[in-house]
Length: 212
Image (cartoon, rainbow, N blue to C red):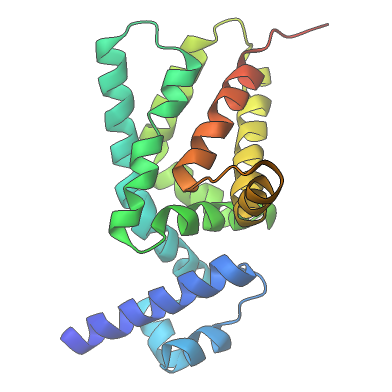
């Protein structure tokens, strides 16, 4: 049983690293099995398909992040009836950073994986996330909508996707951006600083009044 567990973990670790670096489409099962030092039969036994493997890689993070984010939002709403967008987005910082306790560079890796799914249009991932973590997503969307009641639902849909796109681009470019900031402005930022920098921008963008 221990050997089976070790094999499954090796496959997940190898797949996670390759997916984050190369993307889902450009990472073959042959490449994963080579890095994990297992045969293809092991991948099929533990996961059944590449899609299931992709979902399992994300689930290691989502199973921890989603409930933690929901808990932080609930705490905020319990303390403040009219929480601002800035406060709501800020509740996600601790759950994101705590992913570093789950795995080394967990925060960065998780956001990179989300970005890969977003950029590569992995439709099955959207189905997986909405099916397995739908209640957490609804809680977040409702909290944002309640804080910006002047934004119609259809417009909020677009703005939340723009928000996700901004986060994806920022995290995908985080290394380059921090290097430029250090060289040009003598400003030194870690991953938390980058996340906190983008929050006011996201809050302002979501809340700006709709124009005709």
